[in-house]
Image 1 (cartoon, rainbow, N blue to C red):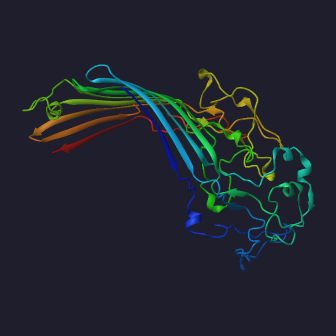
Image 2 (tube, rainbow, N blue to C red; image 1 turned 180 degrees about the vertical axis):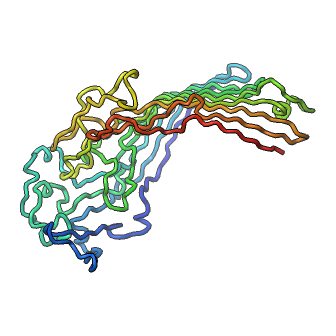
Image 3 (cartoon, one colour; image 1 turned 90 degrees about the vertical axis):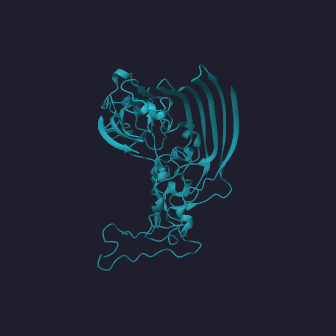
Length: 421
């Protein structure tokens, strides 16, 4: 049997909705009061701050970080397709192979600051930091960092020099591509045994794995921002959720020892009464990508949300050299200096693989007609294999390249009784 399909699905990408359902200027605003000379306090605590919300005027928001919306970008849409071949090997055993794919267009890009210098402007170097006369002095409130008589020369080269960050609520210019090969073998319950074994080999590539900042209501705060808002091709990489290999096997076995019988021995009740049942599941999967950044973003003054390090060698280590103390080749990364963008991609290394096996033994004891007592003995993480968390990906941190957490519990054994009637 051959089956194929192709579909086009429209997906509404509304992003964060709270600022739209509770409108404030411009959707929200953050005001502050600072000292003007770094000697005298901004205000005396007993008197409280004198700063007030900015009035709704054409100049509102000057000197602040603000949000914007590009109405022309519209919503995203998804295209999905698949082709599968299924074969019955025996009366109860079937085998299937399939190819599945999808392409999502116009998805949101996280924390894009469009008030950023270009790479060519950044290459000007140290003159960007020199103080020059502020043409907006007197227009921008003195409480704002841009309200001083002088200002960094680089600020005046930005597209919107009278503002700090300018972040779109939803910049739907990203995309994802998924290709996957799937294989599955299944046996329906026969002679007390059923099982399902499935394997997936896939690749998920995108330009954004984290769409919006969880702290967006506090202002345009970078979480997992793009390296260059004007060159989103730098963001195209294996998705944070990319898992190339996944193998899952599950089985149920009615152990042919001590089974009871009733008037309908071929029925399910006749199989379960006074019998033992064993079930289990095994999961093996590849590790997920790890984002690499560096402790100090030397280009934050120029509006760049993140600065990735330079990649000077292969970050991969042979399996016999990997350990929680050093999961990847940390020497492969070097700090990118100011006024440059690092060469490392968004997700250049992978975390540890995941392995898990669970098993359960179930005993049904017939008490009387249509009533039985179920005893369960369940073992989770049968092999007591630690599932390590992701390694630290911040170059400059003392923990860079190390794993300090586990994602699952150690072996757990539990027992239970249940009366079925």
